Length: 487
Ligand SMILES: Cc1ncc(COP(=O)(O)O)c(C=O)c1O
Image (tube, protein in one colour):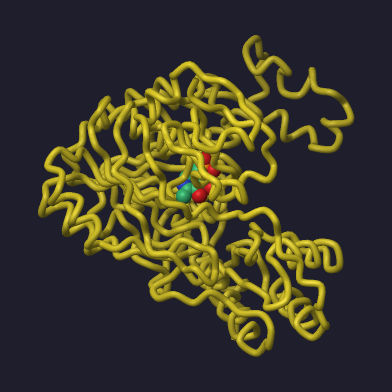
């Protein structure tokens, strides 16, 4: 009987045909046009009189170059040169790669984003919302959505999701809340929701999409943490398949591409002005896109078309299930359980330790880095790059921690997950651009905030421009001495 690796070796062979590389499987040919173009450009050995000015590593600080390797800098090119094509507008291999991505995800168009989902969200607001127009947004949206609304001047109508008080986390968005807002306001431009939450809580996008369609209002979903969903039935259904008009996914978070690379998918049925979106992105994106980052996106998409890529996703799910079953056996550590959820996001809390304490123990005693820690718990991700060994080690460490007598529970002074209901006193954009002053935190109570305070992670608003600062904000503002308020 062949092992999986042997089977994969049999199925996948790299064929070097003149200058191009094609990954053949027994069923189909998988192309990665940007990766091919990069390899061709690398092998070409031309003379270069253009950016980037380190000219394939010649001008790089030697210790850095030695550490990173010569190849890295020889590959650090931007678009336009050596047959790579352009990002804005998409041409050549970059255009082809975006089209392959759209085909895989069932989109009309997929647009590659450098500067992450952040730039995608800002472009959405800039292109598709207007000053003073209303957008229904979940309060626990990422700060890039807030930035977008400050830029466009749109008015948020906040949806407050359920609260998971015991976990200090936001829960699901209630579809009835969206429906009520749409019934009350007949001038809503779009519904813009985050799904899933950072911790993997999933809302009923199918029902919300039905409600939006019934009101003829487009639905945009920030699916930054859901890139892999289309590729395994044990994961939730992606919003694009549930009727969303536009979806933004951080490929780099879970999809296997490099940091800061994301994709915006536009639905085949959207009535949005797609060209407006493309134009906004053109204004916001860098004019010197990194071919390494673009090739990383192309490679991540290609990998999702291989048996190995699908196998890695199944491994990530199985590893997460294994860890959950081990956590179930513990006495003092529990895992957040919601249905449906994304099983690859594992949020746990310990009876006698704050999240920060648990994170510190894992880091200092066991050399483990987790995704995030709050005053209540920690978030760990089961990724396509993790092995079962990683999880066996993690489970052993948690078992040891569970067996130890932790009597020094430190109630954290600083609260992490902002869960306050805002008191809005001024328009968001107006307050942001108002005359401001800095005041000591203690003197800011009763004043109107002029700044976005949304620390990462999770990048959710503690305070926004135009909102009243109250005593309740103080536990979230431990690291601040002064605040910017409207004068
Ligand atoms: C829900 C959500 N949306 C958007 C973003 C921004 O994504 P990126 O880091 O790809 O810019 C994040 C980042 O953490 C996020 O959690």
